[in-house]
Length: 313
Image 1: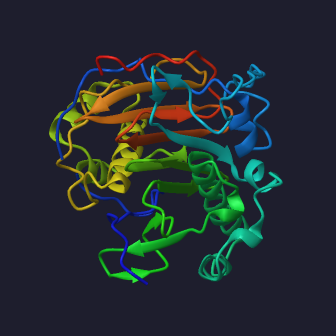
Image 2 (image 1 turned 135 degrees about the vertical axis):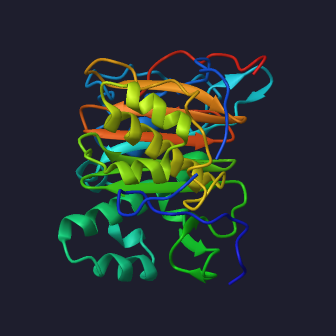
Image 3 (image 1 turned 120 degrees about the horizontal axis):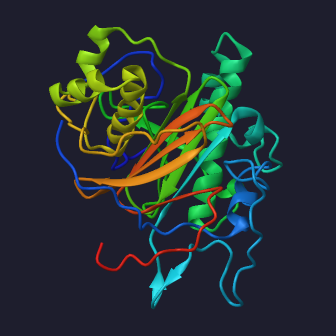
């Protein structure tokens, strides 16, 4: 099998911590959002409710505009990546998320998990990324084959996920206990998800991941562990998009990105880092903290707002 043109990836989870690099742009709140409930319904069975638990607006696509396309601006479609954060149970209850879609390699990897819950998290993430890729390409999930390749050991079966033979879509996935995330789009994309309550990180670990400036910001915060986790998922997403690696994480300075919003509700915020689009999600209903990084704007399923033109961006 030919070697795919992809960068290495390291799976999410606080199972081993890296080191990282640089600087950024101010928050950008003008990214286009998907207004079609068809997108959400095509990805999860629970998509009749938004991330905040409120019903989604049912928006019918305009005549002649396929539901599989993102909102249009001007003469052509807006290039965007699609991202979804869901519970493992939500994905596995979706009628299109059949375990039979997995390759033999994926089934063998899934079978090696000692705990059934961990196996199901793995399966759900690998199914969800197919649904996102199918949405991005406008095809059925059955038509999506998923493979993985590791540049470091030059072996297939693990590492960066990709869709063989399709250079028009790039994908990323992540899973933790009971929660999964996936993203797909026409350009480089990375996603990472962790549990909101996963804290108590040792100071030595903080120093392996955060820059000196980030450590100062964390030290001034009333919730330094929360600051760390937000930067951790951002940097893991940057690893997956190919911007850095676990060995260089500490060199990436994200202190200029907006902090996590205060309050107890679900929040979504957007910013930019060195030309990359950064989407941060705190999903209190699912107990998830996630970040998506992409070279193109990110449409998060479950959001219902009118699209905003990208002029001047």
